[in-house]
Image (cartoon, rainbow, N blue to C red; front, top):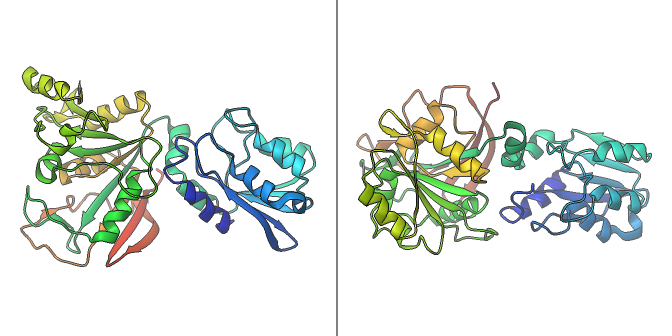
Length: 354
């Protein structure tokens, strides 16, 4: 199953909004076929693996990271291919939360195939966290990415751009962006960093993520890189009713989509923005700061995953803290993955269920 999970991850950024799925066919303790869902609308993992196995699939065991689908969508039901293959046993990591697609287990068992479910379930759910969140919570999945120093600083001084992580970690961020529907930052980060917020790594996303700025006064500079590229890569600004009409008009004239939302404590209400984005089809958002936005998402329970890129350096007391000392609260998060990118370390945390 771990091999199937590793294969599934190869579909990152290419299958959304569908889940990433991997499959392995084993006959007499030998892998005879394997596959993964490589592209939205393309063949599903089970079909690819079973076709690779051919006749050796008969009497074999199929390991798959998600319950085989049992409905006609862009492709026929995977259960049809499983039944035709002649496999004797199917081992599934986790059930499908999508009510339209589920039912595969019942159909396979009714046909006399032995089915085992729940193998490496936590890992399978973590792999497709946004997919499960969307179907189970009916809301946008929010991941928060921060690059921090060993002393927990975002920059050497407030309002100043500081390059913290190295090239390998920066490449990893590009790949991370590609798996999300939108990239979100606050106005302070937009001013300090003038980011482009595009996914420029490998793999390339099927569609570019929407670039979102929380900017109460609609003050984003029309000469910024984000605004200058708005006609090529979609960009949106969420402001409050206090934003001047001429500022809004300038951004809209440059191709930026501007939307007024309610405010909270004098700022754009992040929870309202997330609801608006979900209504517009945005199922997964990657927030890249800065500190004020990060603190709000964490303190209000709006973030579901943390990607902390930690660099082996200190920025000192004058630096900008990543978040207040009491945010996130102790015990609220669990470490689910560690990765090394050159001299930097990526720590991935998921919020514990209440």
